[in-house]
Amino acid sequence: MRIASLLPAATEIVGALGLDDRLVAVTFECDHPAGIRDRCPVVVDTALPHGMTPAEIDAVVRDRAARGLPMYSLDSETLARADPDLILTQDLCRVCALPQATVDEAQTAIGTDARVLSLDPHTLDEVFSVIAEVADAAGAAPAADALLAGLHARLDAIAAAVAGRPVPRVLALEWTDPPFLPGHWVPELVSRAGGEAVGAIPGGRSVGFEWSDMPGPVDVVLVAPCGFGLDDAIAQAEAVRDRLPPGVPVVALDSASFVVRTGPRLVDGIEAIAWALHPDAVPEPPPGRVRAFGARARK
Image (cartoon, rainbow, N blue to C red; front, side, top):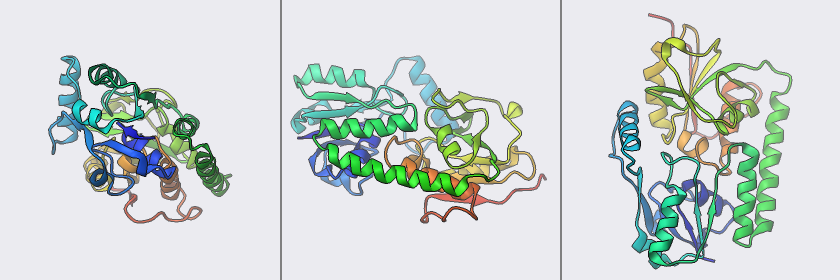
C-alpha cells in the first residue's frame, strides 16, 4: 500500500507502526521518523512567512482566516505522481494542518480514487483509536496492538508513580502572545501527568485570555507553544516569566514533538510533564524535551 501523509502526526503514526517504507508523500513539517523528508516528496507547504514572532504569526493567521485564505498549500501534481492508495489528513484545525476539503478538491482535480482517512481526535483515547484506524486501513492491525499495549503500560507506570501525591495547579499555555489556554487532548496530558490544567477545557477548543485575567491560583506554568520546539519554548517561557505572580516556576516543553501531534509521542510528553511536576517520583526524560525554571522573584 502506498501512503500519502498530509499531517505530521500521521507520518509519526505510520513510522511507529513500522510502515514508513510505504510513505510516498509527506509535509514540510514531517521530521519523525528522522530523515523522512529526504526519502519522500513533500507535497504540503506553509503559506505563512518564516521567522515570525508569536504575535506576528497570530496577526497573519487572523488576517488570512478573515479573508478566507489558506494556511497551507498542496502540490497536487506531485501528489498525483506519488499515486497513493491511502491519504491521511485531518479536519480538526485549519491553522494546524491542511484541511480535508483541500484534499477532496485535489482528489477531484487529479482523478484519484485513493481512500482518504481523516484523523480528528479530541482526547487521548481517541488518539489511540486513530492509531488503530490507520493500522487497520494499512492492513497492519497486529502492529497497532503491540504499539498500543506499550503505550498503555507506560501510562500505567506514570499513574502509579504520581498516585496519592499533591496535584499542582498548572497554567498550560498553548500560545504566549496573545496567551491561549489549550483544549482538545492537551489538558488530559497534564492530568495524566499528575497535575490539574487550570482553566483549560478537556476535549474542547483552545481559549484566549488577557494576562490581567489569568486563571488561578497557579502552582506551575507550562509553556508549550503550538508547533514550536524546545528552544523556542524556552525563549517564550523567559518572555512570560515577568507576567506571572511571584514564586511561580515555569516549565518549557517541546510542543511540536510531544504535545500537538496526535501520535504515540504524546506519551513521551506526559512523561516529561510528570517529571517536571513530580521530579522525585518520575524518571527524568532524555535531554531536549523539557526545561524547568525556578521561580522568579518580582522585580
